[in-house]
Amino acid sequence: MKLSKFMSVKGIIHCETGLRIGGTKEGIIEPGGSENTIIRHPVTGLPYLPGSSIKGKMRSLLEADPSSGSRIEGDGKPCKCGTCLVCRIFGSHGMSNKEITRILVRDCPITEESEGVLRSAQEEKGMNFAEVKSENIINRNTGIAANQGLRTQERVPAGTDFKMHITLKLFEGDDAAQILDFIKKGLSLIQKDYLGSSGSRGYGKIIINDLNITED
Ligand SMILES: [Zn+2]
Image (cartoon, rainbow, N blue to C red):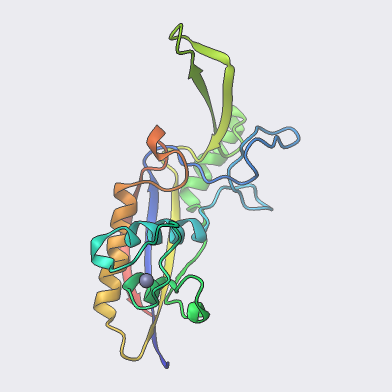
């Protein structure tokens, strides 16, 4: 297969709610930190959104969409048919040709503006570039939140923006418009659903602004 062109799909991912993509194993408490930390840049400590999380979420939502033609077997594993749109764009799971992947989702760094906001909050409130959220478990007999059940989790604060960059590698014979439409559908499904964990508890609502598609 001959490579025909690269395309870029860029945008700004805006967190409408707190968002959590875990950085360490759940429950591990880092020295001087909270348990259940978010993923951060190892040097700056700033949060970022891993491309793998976005790609994985987009893939699972698109596989479930009737338009994809994907086949999910009883084991619940990703489609490995090799011919549906998901397999052709995201790679076919468990097949020898899985290297043929047309989509690369880069890690999304925080925008300069949001970095400034989080740095101010750090200076003013001692925040460690993240919100620490406590969640109670309600006692079923008394209806009272039990402090013993309290656990804390870090989240990227609502309002934070990240720079999204998706690269599409198109090969000769590919229908660029069809592939782009499918990617746009994936992005629209993530905005309807959620990114990261605990979507049913209100986490991870995102909006993608300034979507910009270019041929590189
Ligand atoms: Zn497939």
